Length: 283
Image (cartoon, rainbow, N blue to C red):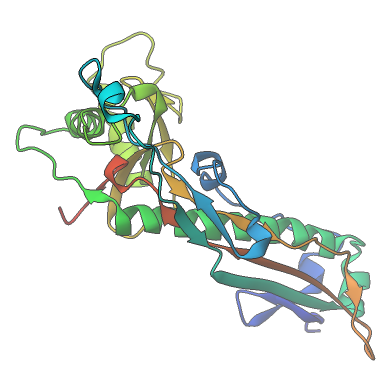
């Protein structure tokens, strides 16, 4: 006899789940760790719920000859035009399941489990937008001809950020840099460390090498296509967000179905494009 099909719980986008395969069990969704929430700037003024917030960046001080302020009768004015970030992306996740499915699966909190997955989905969307902004608004890095292996390429990338000088920056310390690599390039770096760096402190069995030449290193599956690496200071990108309070599964009127929903707004903008450098396959 053919297995009973669930009414609304969908598998692989079209084929409905076979009840006998998941009776009393919900397979947990899997997702790689997300980074945007830990890397984004938190230094804003205003309430994200109002639809926009402001960020400010002070220029470096400039010294003058003694007596300049006395002669002018005033000091140098601090002018800090704000950078406004609008929460202009409006999203929702709304799912529903038939009471029949909930009862037959034998898992009373199946919708709560879906709610957990919704949080992961939102985090993944934030990371995708975060790194897309970095590549759209940052500066493309071209590896020097002398950089023939991943280690030298990454060191050259680090030094490119380290030596930035302008009205706001006089060089960047490595301890505030954050380097994010694609899984493929991260694997190249891991191989480089395994095979080239003959150091007892390098554990070839470890997935995570955490730092490289003083810079914190991460791997992310949410970099854009063809991206190999991005380096930035912590707080270089703004991503204010509002996630509206989550509710328990709600019974849908005039039905025996239950729904769960999440609504959220966010915006993404690079605040310091001079301190974001990107490296892609095409370069």
